[in-house]
Length: 409
Image 1 (spheres, rainbow, N blue to C red):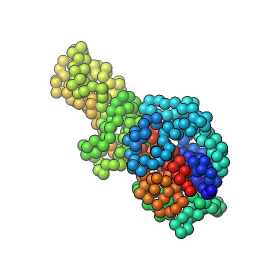
Image 2: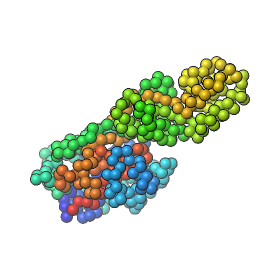
Image 3: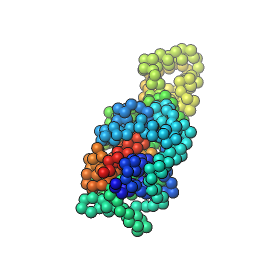
Image 4: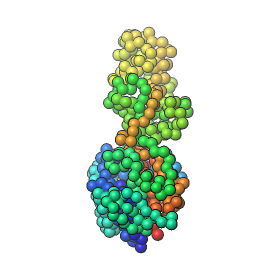
């Protein structure tokens, strides 16, 4: 039996502690906050989107950075395993649109309560309000952890599950990255991910609060498509947000020329350009003597009408029968390709996750053990792993944490 320290009581840390204790190890879980799973309480708008119920192969498809690294982790403990574990622990689940999985109660606290019960059943010692200063090592192997209060705890293995830099109010301030670097690990530059995007166009800010549903958002870099998705988005005082935008933001970092990034909205994705033109023509023929501004309201939300008039270049006062074929074509083009120039991402305070972190080439994907220091297991958001929205990032945390806990000898 090994003495195991788990640093960080989030999703990855709690799962690692449970898995290690289930193997008979003596486990102490150290959390600097006043409660476990503090970040879980704000995920999914407080409902906690614990995972996604898709097929396992689709888990990989939704991972943005280093999906191949996760083959062993997802094989050892996938979304189905997690759902079964939570149900057995007294947290019934439900599957919603996009195969997102939530607790039936819609309360994130029920997820944390279920995990806390599992930890108690397995005899895990949980210590709250405990901050770790550093992990000690000798002869290339971890020996324990030094706490901020000066106390030293000996250990045969340490699971480092301190998270990234997103939501710093929950305590994620990069402490784990600093500790990992101190032990010889290198980091891929950390950037905000799953975060709103800022845009250059003034008309975007005029639409603040407007939500668009059932649209397609396509992000391009220098004209080349780097991401596209269907769903919902929101205009804000600085640009755009919402589920589609958050997922798109994870691909922003993949573009080397940040001055050439655009986001284009297809307002009518169910219609081809030809079908849309016929729809517009039909509306026009039924309202030939009305002004353009009074006719296109059937095509768009009312707040979007002034913007579509502006971008189409058609005088709003113009009578419909005076609108030319070229102008009608321009209106259809703007409808299918409402384009904004992306000028940047919002910072870590608004980001759901962190992109970048401990380089995965320095970690054994079959066990999550460090290749640099024996007995060290970096897991979860601390690593250079991230995915789009929909429960996939939490599944990365659950899976890597579980694999680490099960792999400790």
